[in-house]
Length: 303
Length: 303
View 1 (cartoon, each protein chain N blue to C red):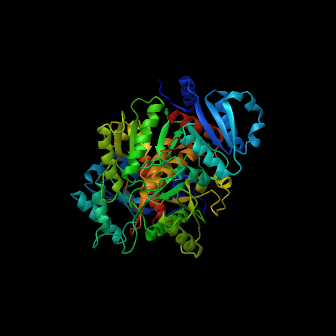
View 2 (tube, chains in turn cyan, green):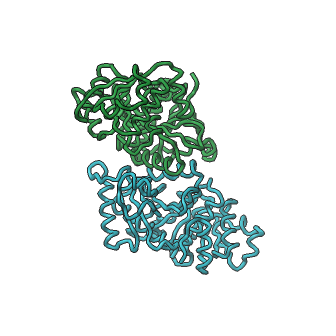
View 3 (cartoon, rainbow over the protein chains, first blue to last red):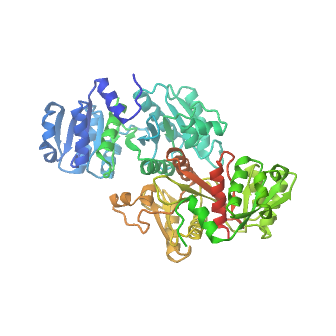
């Protein structure tokens, strides 16, 4: 399998796999969501169930070309649409759930519902982003910029697991995962997460996350840049070529996310991981391409 | 006074002021520190006291041109040199202290010494950085990427104060200071610093930080980009044109710092603020220009 190096490569990767993923799209009333789904249909990558008030979607001329790949499930309220899509996922009838134009809280409420939701007991729900930074020749994945404020050891370990799985799913045979901190020093008293990092590095060495290289604490520079590593005279199995970054808290991850998008014009995608199926949960303001890449990322990570 | 927009402007600003700042340079044994000091001398911006084993410095041909502006204070150990420089600052004989080739801990130990140091009781010692990002038409100041791990309300307030003073010192008449968080929502329970932010915004409105605009919580995008603010339909007195960012913790500030330097090739400078005089405390790996700009920033902020 070829290693995916950018978002275009992600599409190609899915096309080459030959497997069409089944996607439930909830309340696809906005143009960006519809265009993202159109693109995936045009490339033959998905089979789609539009869930909600489907009148708004049915008249789209583009969809006629894909009649056999498009289905409609009526729902009169946002709540009902979210619940129906989640039920389809729980019963194994779709591989991915994608949110359209409805409140994030409504969608999450259906996902997290204790009886009818799709978060298996003990699983950690976390937010994984990918960014394509113009000066970097690979996709960079990271967590968690949006869901878990201050992840504990169990949650940091789950994030590492998801990132390793996702990277391998797109052809990175031995993903390099960096545990981010402001320095390279472990300091249990001031920074308890650095002790968690040591535990995760040990778990990785014991094979807990499958084939991968995990190291940290490292900062963003020593994680992603071999020269910065050399200047600080640090040896790291990642060699300054991290594929994925685990941030210690939502503030650091979010600062990274907003900084790369604003100042490097990075393209990004993101999904929720940890539920029975990946959930695409874009912001209203996200561009069509960001929604499309997020859908691709979800399809790639779906079982 | 003209507003300083980039690091070159900072030099010009100091030259126009016509006041030469007095600088104690501790253990100037490394080439980058010496070159940074040479540049400032060549432009007539400083009068310098080399403190330490001064044999290494005296033979430099460049210094002969500035005989009247260069002085030497002998010290046989790093500890003695640090102590002597700090004493000069305490007694009002220098306006800035700059660290050369000695351990950061040795320098900080002298600064923080309870009896002979220069941190007034109750003052907060904090790390202020400035970055010049190629796509941004102004300098962006921020704290704290290196010293205070998780600032409390008092420390966040002090950071706001220092940033406001520093910006005004370089001609930004009404500095715009943003209090950074991952969203624009105040959430006292999950994120206690957002309640501190509300307090700081109130303090600012009451004139506590002098003339300035303070707003938050805002994220990095809504702080620095008017379009991002408009998309989220947020009204902010900063109008997406922040001059300075206060980060909620060292992880977020450090992630920002490392990300802009690695992926946008930003130039940076930094100083310690809060002691009786600004302290330039560069890393060994810093370039000559970074050390020079840090020295300029310290001179601009010195009383």
